[in-house]
Image (cartoon, rainbow over all chains, first blue to last red; front, side, top):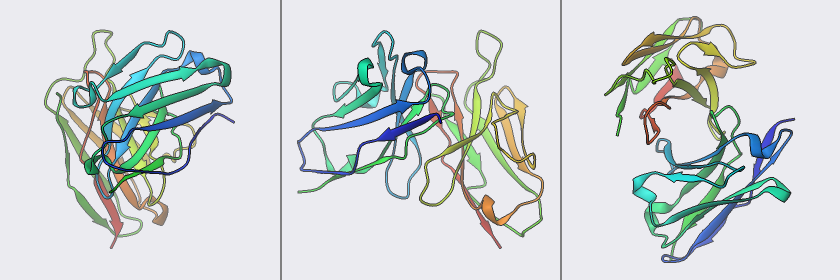
Length: 114
Length: 112
């Protein structure tokens, strides 16, 4: 079936980087954009940016410009989101979602703590 | 950025009773192609969000027909005709018309 499966939980120190993966299956990976959304504990949803897996083109929310990088490996149908210069406020569940948000990954908990 | 304002933020409902959530945008959500990119999501406790409604009023596959979406321009509504226990969770609206994409704050539906 159509699904997005994300990598496991991460614990990072402030100032470090984290790279979360999102593996697509059940559909043609390059035919649908991938969005990244995050959710701090008990908080709402925040859109981070978008990537076109076919071209590699990306678009990032201004809040994350300079700190986020979205890439892909088409040979294994996997998208990646890397966030650098982590701070405690980046502690959240990070989700990938297909183009129109019809399919979501299960989420990846990223904890930033010294 | 387009601000999406939901009300109420908390919605206690008796089983079998109707429920309604409002979502207002700070700008019109009508895109240049004539479509209005307003989605509704349900997030049950401990789960990923699930899209219920897309482009204002279109049901996603498997969504019970007790859910319905309506509205236009800047004013949108999600209605549940008869609330069931499985409807407990947080509901979000999201606009996909303007960059950056933005979500409402969420409405927590609970059973009275």
